[in-house]
Length: 129
Length: 131
Image (cartoon, rainbow over all chains, first blue to last red):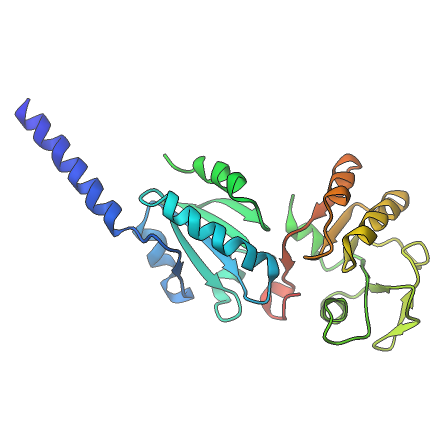
């Protein structure tokens, strides 16, 4: 019984430590760091954006709020298509903003265009296991 | 909805709300699409020509039916544009940011018109400037 409690305590401690390592703000991701970032966290949402795109500017504060609210479950990243093009081309990004949802490094969902916070939260909750 | 279906090379594109003013989106959208698609038509009743190309007064006056209509007009004009799209059997409408209207989006939904809004499109796999 003691052993079981010890294991639970260790697991909880590990989860807590991992959660603390999750960023609370969207990370700026470069093409060269893309794969590494996906491998680091279980669920990563990557926003392909540009400062010249009005809907991208609209969705940015929404993603910042979601990054705080889903802290510990989802990590958000941003790829600026003005300077970083390789991953955008690789994943066939044809419109911005595009959010790619990766779970354990695999692409699970693509969300195109501005969406309100509630709608995004609903879409993202499907991927949090 | 598949965004890529809007951006197939073989699509006939029509830009409603083109302008001759280089600082305006209506100009940038048309110029960019013209470099990326073989058949792009300019629509605006105010102009006869834009960057040397014929500018048509309406969607109805185009020599062929476009596959995709891009709106760069005020939201209330978009509401009329989607009605013309239904009459002409046009199935895809991309409302550029600022031209979208709730009424027009709902109209598209009711009439089986694929509608993209709240996004800027990217052409040629980002080799060219997005608009």
